Image (tube, rainbow, N blue to C red; front, side):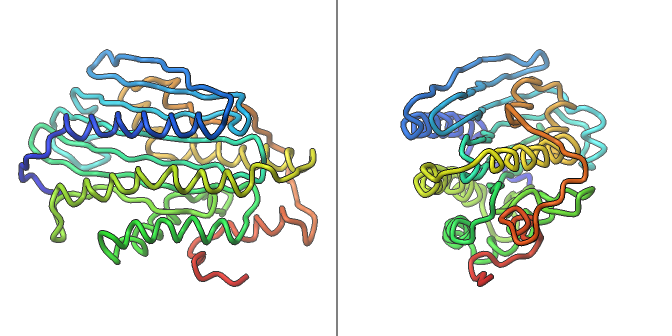
Length: 307
């Protein structure tokens, strides 16, 4: 972590996050062609607030959220202890997205880009983007990871392999011994170290934010008209159940939001409208469902994957 002050302010960063929320919401509404985002503006009693935007019952999107927040105030003692930080006030701002599509052939996507600073000058950027297919499709996985690698390589060729591994390790359902999906990139505590300036770190975060729509809307186009059966929906509900398990049991962002008295409805907007749990479900041998389970593993090189 670095404490060097630069001309780049938290207000400038926060304004860009707001513009990112606006742009993504507009593009998703246009692509869905039916549903519109509903906005709730909220205030946090201890300081700050945000704009929660929820979309539901669309042509393509069953439920989703694109949230912006900027909160501040005294850092809770349990967070200070967990992060091994000195007692200070904090400021945290960012955008968080989760989209649950209707068609089980379209994957769930999650993205978060964020900035955090303390009154002693300590700051860092974090975030990432990951994909959770109900059905693993090799060409989609390759496209998704190639998009992320291209974005990372613009800033450092070390980014993609490092942040991909971080995502594999982070988005892992330990009690199931399976990854939440096909991963992506995940990063945290990026500050002015390793030869990077604060502006260079923010440039990277902006590029990650801006890759969301070109990437996910392509997956929309490729899969939205694919036919599916009732058993495909049943499998989708089971995979959503795994998504719920990860978010409620393991996700640090969920815990941070709840521990800092964030807005509960906004924090839990990531949960799907409908999910299911079937006792000891076993997919049929040779089925697409079995294939998917076999590929929910860490360290798969999706860009060069050959089956």
